[in-house]
Image 1: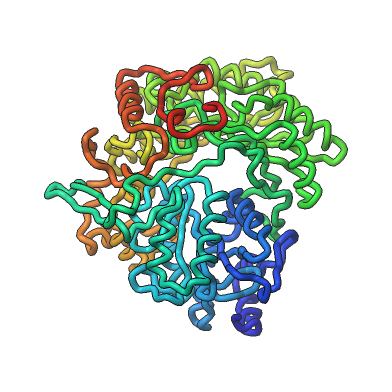
Image 2: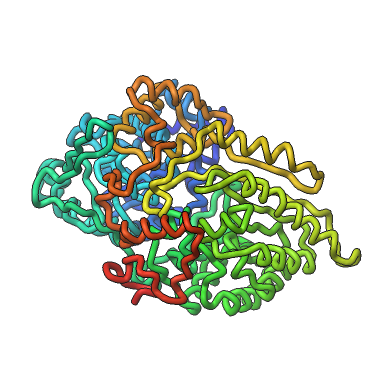
Length: 614
C-alpha cells in the first residue's frame, strides 16, 4: 500500500483530487484476504472520460460478482498529479484500495482511441512496471488489452502480453478461470501464454513471426508453432438478455462526460456505412428485450439517483421497439423528472413521436450527422439518407421548439471534390433557411447552428481500409475553404485538427514497426495526445525519424487488394471479399441496403450467429 499521509498531502495540490480518491457511491470494497485474483481495469485517459465508458461499468461489476476476484480501477493521472507522484515516488495505484499496480495479477487496458497509446506506456512506467513485455519478469502482472482498437493490435505488439478480440464479458472470466488453474500448478508465464492462446478471441503477439518485403509491405505472418491458431476469431455475445448487465453504476463525486444512466439497447448496426469500423466489427445486431430494458432502467435510476437516461447504441433509432420504450420510460419516470436522451439518432429513423416524448421533460440541442455535404458523397459512403431527410427532420424539430442544432460532417472521404466540401456550407445554410421560413410565431428561441467537420481516418475492417488518407495539407485546404465561405452569425464552423487525424491514421493501420514510434514518442514526452493543449505534432514527427519510419507509408498510401494487411489474421466475420465489393460499389456511387431488409452477404451469418442473423 502507498503512504496515505503523502498521498493526502499531494491531493491538496492538484486540480481535481476527486479523480484519485475512490470511495464513490456504488464502488466495491472487498476483503483482500478473501480474494484470489486481482484485476485492474485501466482506462488510458482521465477519470472523467473513463468513468463515462459503459464497458468499464460492465466489466467492473461483472468481475466483482465473483467472490475470489477483485476488479479495481485506475485512470491516467493528469500532468499535475503525475508530476507530484514522480517527485514523491508514489507509484500508480488503484482507486479502491490504493494498491500499487505492480501488485496486481492483471492490468487490463481498454483501447478506445489510438491517440491514447502513449498514456498506456506512461501508466506502466508510472506503476514501476517495465513498458516492453520482454523486460517484464515472472512477478510482474500480465498486461492485457481489448476494445475496438484491439482489432489491429500490432502497434502495441511488444507492449501488451495478449489481446482480447471481441466482447469481453465472456472472455475475461475464461481468462481468469484459466489463470487460477495455472497459478495452482506454479508454472512460468510462458506456459500461461501458451494456454491462454488456445482460448477463442485471444491473440498473443509474442507467439507469431512477421516478415516484410523490400517494399515494406508484409510478406507473411505465421504462428511459431502449429498449435497456435492462424486466425483469431472474435468473441461475440449471442443473446444480450442472457449476458450480464450492471444493475448499479458507480456515481462519481465530480462531473464526468456522461453523468447519466446508460441503457444499451442493442449491439451492432445494419446500416453498412462504409467508413464505420464499429458497424462492421460489432456485427451481427443483437437487441435487448423491451422488458429487460425497462427493469434495468428502474434499478439503475434508483441506485444512482441520476435524472437522465441515455438510450444508447450505434444507431439508437433502429431499435425495433424504440417508440414503445421511450413512451414507457417517460410514463414510468414522469413524477421523478427523469429525462431521456438519444445520443445517436439517425436522420432516416428520426421519429417525431419520439422527439415529442423526450422534450416533455428536458429540451437540449439536437445532433444530426449527415457525414457528407453532397448526396453523391453520401451515396459513396452508403449513408442511406438524403437532403430531404435532413430538411424534414429539422423542420419537425424547429416546429416543436428546438433552436439549437449540431451537424456533423467528415472531410477527406474517398472521391471527395470541392463541390462535396462546399455542400457542407450549403446544407448548413439550408437548415438556417428552414428555421426562418417558419411562421414568426413558430420561431422559438435563438437559432444556433454548429457545423463540425472531422478528418476522415480509414480504419481496419471497413470498405475504405485500402484508401489513402488526405494529406495534412489537403485537409487544411478544405478547412480554409469552409472557414472562408461560412459567413453567417447563426452558423458556427468547427473542425478537427488534421495533424491529429493524420497520426491516428498512421497508428490505426500500422504494423508492428509502429510500436517503435509510439515508444519513441512516449520517451520524447508525448502523452494525452488527444488533448489539444498537450498534443505535440513535432515531437511525433521527430519520433518517426528516430524510429526510421515513414508515416506517409501508413497514412496517405493507397493499398492494393492483394496486400497482406497487418490485421488480416483476425476474423471479424465480415469477409475481405465483401469489403472489396463494398469499396467497388462506393467508387460507382452504388448503395447497399440495410441488412434488416435482407441479407447483403457480408459473411457474418455463416460464422457468427445471434440477433438478426439467427
